[in-house]
Length: 79
Image (cartoon, rainbow, N blue to C red; front, top):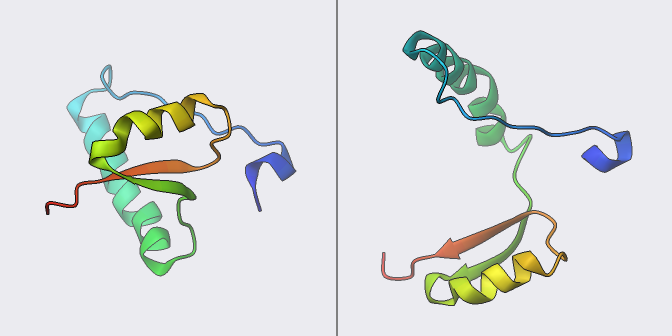
């Protein structure tokens, strides 16, 4: 169910201040609990639009427009 429907808040933080042991524990938990859900398709990111890398300025303008819901993906077509 979408976050807005349940009035949930999604928050993030950096791991700079964490010890190496804490970072390893977080990475292990992510690998064991989250990646299987992504791999199975039970959860997936919402991709709003995809732009060629050369159009990063256009993608940035779209992001600033306030119309963005989901993720923008820049694609390097040379690989």
